[in-house]
Length: 269
Image 1 (cartoon, helix red, strand yellow):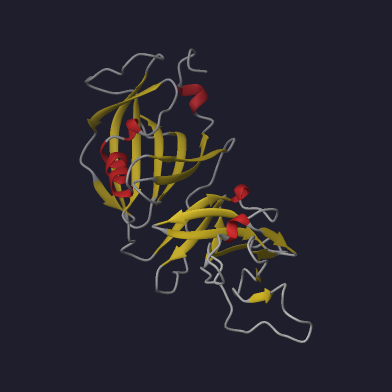
Image 2 (cartoon, one colour; image 1 turned 90 degrees about the vertical axis):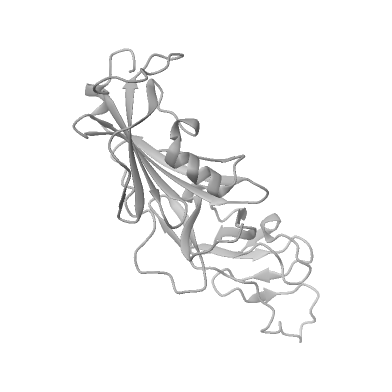
């Protein structure tokens, strides 16, 4: 899939990007190696050595630089410049044209985001809304859906992709979908539901609201569990990015609000 617009793409959890070993990710057929330099700053470089196209993510981090596993060419993550070639003589210098492509990268609220696009990144930071008020729960994985199909399911049937234990999500829309702050917002009825049971198909008033806010640009979606007066109970931020061959990569962070302890039935806790 070719990305049609410039955007920040959160591609990894902050704790998964280290100074010990590069992390290889793919976004829209673009292989990217993520790692931390000697100062602990995250760098994003093309995951292909310009010498023989070997994946840099299979290499090592040496003194804050990334070293290719094939012939040992070493690159600075900030500038992309080649800093060392093992077979050069002592009197030879690395030609300045030897470098690897880099991408703007920022670490915000537990996510590592890479700017993919031709234009200059905007001043506002990605994932700025994520502000955990309870124990942070994070994870990553992939789904066997193309990116556009994944976005369609997130809008029209999020219960196929995620679950709140003890909560049944219905397909009953509460009001009309609307666009707010660059995201498509959809509310659905939900109810406290015992394990193995389905929520009621239709009742005059549902106990809960599941609100999905799917960004129209990029791959970030926010899912919130609310009570009937819209008191926040749970909050999840999910980042999706197109991988290859009909796969969508995911990483997410979420937390429970303290109010859920008072709202949930005793069996839920």
